[in-house]
Amino acid sequence: MELHIGRVVKPHGVRGEVVVEPTTDAPEERFAPGTRLESKRGPLTIAHARPHQGRLLVSFEEVPDRNAAEALRGTRFFAAPREEDDGGFYDHELEGLEVVKDGERVGEVTAVNRNTRQALLVVGLEGGGEALVPFVEAIVPEVDLEAERVVITPPDGLLEL
Image 1 (cartoon, rainbow, N blue to C red):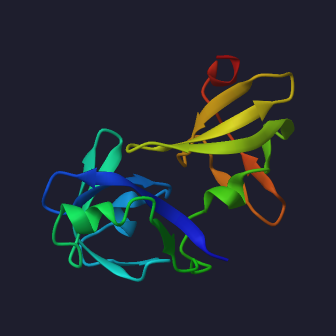
Image 2 (image 1 turned 90 degrees about the vertical axis):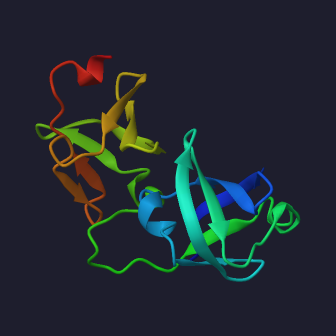
Image 3 (image 1 turned 135 degrees about the horizontal axis):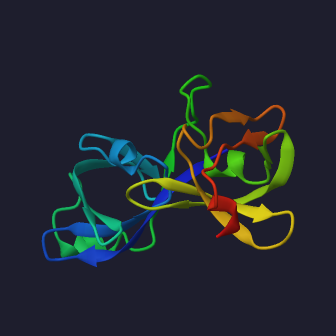
């Protein structure tokens, strides 16, 4: 299975930089200089990447100018399969998991929102509505893919917002 990690939105400037919409939990690792990305248009090697307005500005060794960057518009990038013991999770692995607090079901993970600072689990609550739960170990101490559940220990009021 291919894991989509980002997409070129448009070129940026005249030196071959492109705006990339990352869809990965670790853009700083996946888009690090020297990283070789796979795409349907062939492999590309990252020369430089930097955050810009919630997205990334990326330059590739193989893309010398704006015309070459324009040809990449819409290009999607894919990651190699995850190693089993790397401790991370893909969004599709988390979506659909039962969310449990103090042994009681409170809802289900319906999506994962990622921004440049941290991931948030979007939890559809049993009583209706949804809550955004920061995906940090202090609040989400356990993710059990085999049992298909996430244990949360949210601060008071987080699920009532």
